[in-house]
Every structure is written in structure tokens, then in C-alpha cells.
Length: 635
Image (cartoon, rainbow, N blue to C red; front, side, top):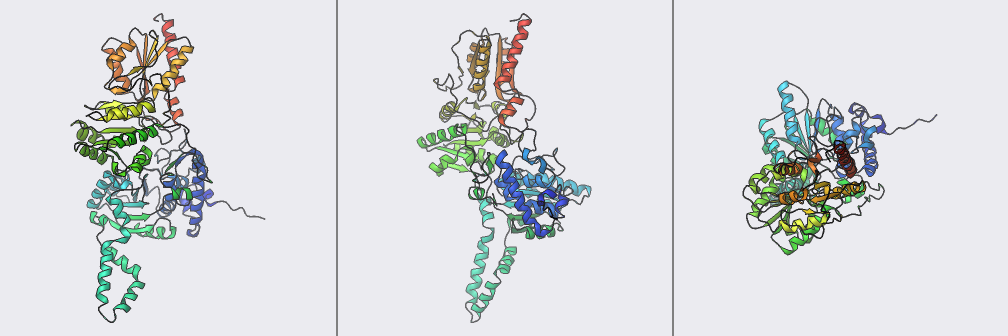
């Protein structure tokens, strides 16, 4: 008779099953989990490096703490894949980040083990502190654990929460600092350097040298030095405990640093600190991409991946040039001509395309870490000093710096350029990352110019125009192919002016589109033309200032007008066009955009289809409306 040996992961449906596994088998389980993550993410794409780095840490947390009674709050929560595998979602794991599947982030309506919905960095300590205070107020005994990376720790919000927690001595709070030296791009700044220097402190080195110099004056000195060398680890630890610790000065009980891949040691440490009243900070050293050599060697490249070959690690490359690629080329061209042009980003040099300029001339690039508010006000300070800062930040992340955009830049009309990458629908990252609000939140700010290119050529020209202006500018563009030829490509971008794409002078339907929706509007026009309906398309290019005269001329004597944008409809591009047309008694307008809700995850095409923003869906809607009008005798 043969005994079937099942993988350990097959036996785990919840953390209580995990706690039944002998400690000696946990390293084997960690290996199984890594293989599962690499296998699945090679098909779906997702966050790879960050998840491979926290496998042992996640196992240890669920092994020691009584989850979900004890709560784990994951910062950003893009590192929760092991957590999901251990909390009953393995059978659904192959649907991660897919339409209708499980989220790539923590999500409360998905599991009782997900205690908070997250997607942006720097929030976990505030959330965990709120939960810990609530537990303390109601007399609950549960521990609340914030797991935050060293990249997120540079966020102002995280530092505010640390300061608050330390001064009020919240005893139920444990903060685990996952220190891997990386956020998305390599970490920068004083705090990152402080963490890197924890094990090579100058106070320790000075003390050691002073003692050595003192002892060598005596005959027994060398013998004593040899004895001290033998007990170096204990001696160093003793000095470290006496050394100044930034976290302890804030009021935390500090432990570490310890290896985040040594499961037995981590479990012992967590079991011990579980008995201690906090606030506690445990400093854990991990390696991003641990256990998968391509991710270990190139952690930035394997932070977020498209589908890839799990054997070689090679990712599928797009044959099309993206908007980010065009931005990177234009940035380098402009910066090469004008040394006063500088690029500022918030831990996203690779994702925003700023990396290309940093290779060409590092002195013109400033990566401030995960600190969007600081990035914007830093740009204001440089602009008022005569520089021309270009702030490259994803649309969804720039929301975090709205107060700074309004008061530090726009109020005094400083010439800061905001390059809003990943605007509109972004796909698998889901609702926390959809950049669907920027046309609304930027255009309502006085002194702000807002542009939206329809292809890469327009983006390049808008960049050239923006650096010539003496006031703030926002240029928003999506995550998709920008190699699109339009009929207006021979007409250069001119401030505040849109352009009519076709030469037809008489048409039944006037489509006014902006940004990524212009190319889709062109397809709609062709499909309607095949149906016998004459159509023309107006590429607005500018949301603010809106080309009111151009639009009014474009819709003159037209029976049906529609606007198309990849933005929330409320307060967006379409609402401004409707307002202008209404002032001239033109009311037959339909606006296409995103209704008042958060789009969920899926591919970009799937989400646009759900939002009825595909060329086919827009065409079908217009045909239906025109047919109804004809039947009513109004057309």
C-alpha cells in the first residue's frame, strides 16, 4: 500500500489549519507557496517581487497570532498573495486581478481575514492605530498588526501615525517594518539611509574603537580585547540597546532588526512580543523577489509584471509605443535643451518614464520617495526659484497632494507641469488605482491648464508647449498604446484650441472627444458612416481652457451631439461642454463617460466595455437614439 503525500498547502483552508503544521515543516510550506505564486502570476500578471519577499513573514504572523480576532493591516496590500492562500482563497487564486475574480489587494467583502481595503501606501499605521484604540476603548484583547514597507514609511501619513501612536502609548498596536530596501523604485532619503545603517551605527563603532584604544595601554589589554571579540555579538547588541533609536524616541518599544526569512526565529520573536504591551515596532529585513532568481536580480522590473515565462522570467513585451514612452522621450529632449527643466517623482522613476532622464542626467531628476505632497510643494519651491519642474505621478496617487496643488502651486500661478500617467481606466489593479477623477479635480482649480493628448505625437507637442507657459499645467494620459495616427496630426497643438478631424462640412452627428477617447470616436464615425450616417469628430485637446468657439462652430446646424471622455462624468469634460452649449440653447447632447461609481478590476478593454465606452457600444447607443428620433419624426 502506498501513502499519498499531499502538498502542505493542500491541507490549509484557514490559519487554524496552518497552526497544526509542525514548525519543522514551515520552510517546506514557504517553498510551495513561492512556486504557487510564480506559477499563477506568470499567467495573470500582478505584483510579484513584493509577494515573494513576505512569504515567511506572512506564515509567521498567521502562525503566531489568532487571526481574524487579531487583525493584520497590510500597507498598500499589494503583498497579500500568501495571506490569501492561507485564508481560504487558494481555489480562486488563479482568478486574481481578473474580471470577477479575487482582488490583488486586501478587500473586506472578500474575506473576514481582510480587515481593511487598501491600495495606496502609508495608510496602515493610521488604520491599525484606529483599530487598536477602538479595541482598547471596548476592552478587547485583540492585537492589531500593521505591516508596512520601508518605502511606505517615508510617507508623511505614516510618520504622523507613528508620532501619534508613540505619544499615546496604544498597547494593542504592533508595527512590523518590512525593510527590503525597495518600494517600487529603490528607496531614497534620510529615513531609508537610517534603516540601512542600523547595523553599522557610528556610535557603536566609536565606542568600540575608544575601548580598544583604552585597553591597549595595559599589559592585559590585548588578552581582554580577544575576549571581547569572541563576545562581539553580545557586546554590539548591548551597545545598540543603549544607542539612540529613532522609533524608541517616538515612544515605541523597538525590536530588531531580524531576518524576515528565518521562520523559527521570527516565530519566537513574534510569540514573545505578543505578550508585551505596545506600541511595538519590529524591524524585519527581507529580500524583495526572494526565491525566484529573476526577481531577486531585478526587483524593480519584477515589482509589477505582465504575464511571463516562469522558467526564464521573460515578460511579454508590447510592440506598441506607450504614452509613457513618448513622455520619456519628450522629457529627455526638453531637459537636454534646458537645464532648468527638472523631473520630480514619488518612488516611481521606472513607471513614469523618468528613469530615462535619470540615466542621461541624474542632476535633473529628484525622486522624493513615497511622498506625493512633498513632491508637489518641492516643485513649487523650485518653480519660484526659476526652475521648470515636471512632476510625474500616476493620476490616482496625485489625488493625495490635492491641497498642495491648490495652495502651493495654483494659488500663486507657479509654472509647475503635472504629468498624470495612468489616467483613466488602468485594469487589474482595480478601484484604488483607476485614474478617473483628474479631469474633474484639476479643471476646477483656478490658473490651471488641463490638456489630454489623443496620441503620442500630441503628448510630445503638449510637453513642448507646457514648458513655455508661465502657469501650472496638467497633462493626463492613459496606460495604453500611443502609436495612433489621426487626421489632425498635421495640425500642431496650439494653446486652447481643438481641431476638427474630418473635412466634411455637413454631418448629422457631431462627436466631441478628448484624450484616449478620440481614437475610439474615429472608429465610431467610421461605423456610423457605414450605417449611412454622416459624422464628424472634434478632438478637444484642451479641457481647460475649453475651445468654446471651436466647439460652437463644430456643432452648428447639427441634429445630434455627443461628448466622450475617460473620466467621471460629474464635473468632467462633458459637463463643461454641455454648459457651453446650453448657454447657446443647444440641448440635444449626450455625454459618454463614467457614472458615479468605482469601476472594478479586469483588463482595460473589459472595463471600458462594462462602462459602455467601447466604439461598438457607443455606436449602438447613437444608432438607437437616432432611430428613435426618426420614428418620432424629429429628425
